[in-house]
Image 1 (cartoon, helix red, strand yellow):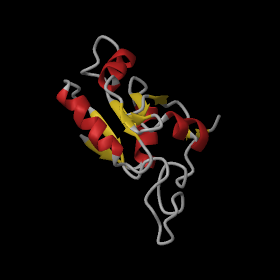
Image 2: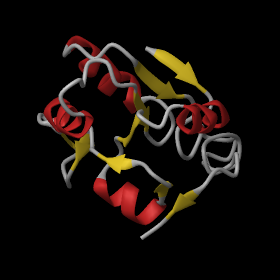
Image 3: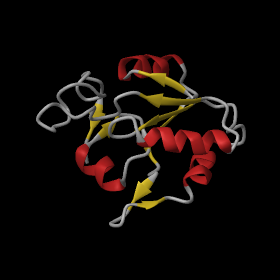
Image 4: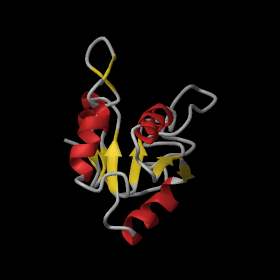
Length: 131
């Protein structure tokens, strides 16, 4: 698995339009916190009980298409931790080029236990939307 900062990821996505950009946060996070423009939601954990999405790999395969193992898959989550588990599952399923977005969408906790202040997609001023 490769690791890129949000700004490096943004440039990578511009340079590699065949890459699949997957936001693996929950549906609630994706909709209400916001998400990077162009990302597709495929939760790793979701629901009220924070259940593992046992269909995650299959859903990403469907999005990536017939040559899924060769297409770059870029994963983003809240802080860059969930993507490590999700990326590992994809690699075990045969995906050859998985990229983890370091610091995720909201970044690490600051000394006051807040996100969106130190790092992450939003802090770096990259395009995002909310609905």
